[in-house]
Length: 410
Image (cartoon, rainbow, N blue to C red; front, side, top):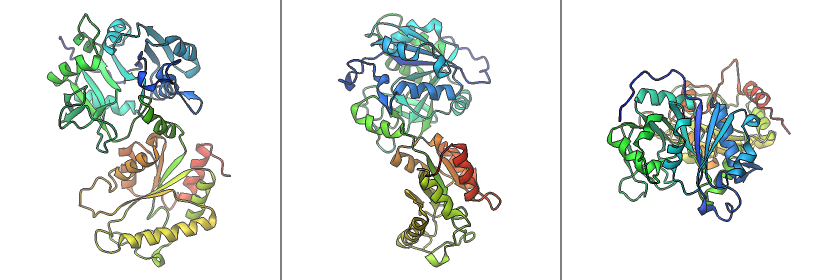
């Protein structure tokens, strides 16, 4: 294959191509009368959420590669005007595999484009994907869920930001990670497909790209959600509920910090910051989920026990109840500064733990905190960060947040 090593354009692609032609047999009887991306959540088809996310990330044109019951999709989305994008369709026989659909549509693809499956939703940051892709300098890049929590069966292995093993059957040993789609690639990659037969894109193209060290991996710890099987539907239902959620730092945001290497070890050392209790109560009355995210190295250092910390948080909760406030969860890192854990801010482990627990879309979550490490953790997790300070305390931040999100307190 002749490769074009001309400089990559500065801006990400504006065309997305969505593979949406399969029968969805694993989802019968739900798919007896509709394609699987048209299964509804909260009154809207799954594909509608996906297309709106693409639009919000700067995608302007979408090519849907259809096969099974194509008219159901075409009738709903039309030319895309209602959704703020331009939508076109390429319909081929339902028996066509992914490679065949792409081969048939090759002349309608931009030189570089985003390719994705119709049944996976992941809160994509197209700018971050594009920067990673251009830095890698490869023909293609795929988003890989690291799968450290055993969320699904792995089908690949990554080393040095490259996919080095791919097994569509998921039978090989030592696999760690799963491709969730969301490819960035050059159109010339499709020349790796055989010119006859009915090939799978993944089964035929992945091995050739891997052999040439041309398949980069963008790894993520943020769960993806899908309509691929019945057991996933309840998780996707909760994820797409999109209940407003705020992460709050503790010391320096809710209560007065004790100073470097000093810790609140007893309730009599706790000092609410002005307006903090009332701000949390405002979030509660507005139906916003509140999760506290806090580093507590005093546990590792022997200044207090986990039981001591739980007692402090129980008293905190009691006083919040008096004013109508509620904290849904508290994520604690008990490790010392230099233990190298994944949870201590500025690492995003506690935020990712909350994501998995509540099926959050972290791109829609705001993290309010006073420390630079809070902002770094938010950035690493893909959250919005709101800086708290003496001049901009939690009470002001919550007021502005509720106004910006158009959330009314009850």
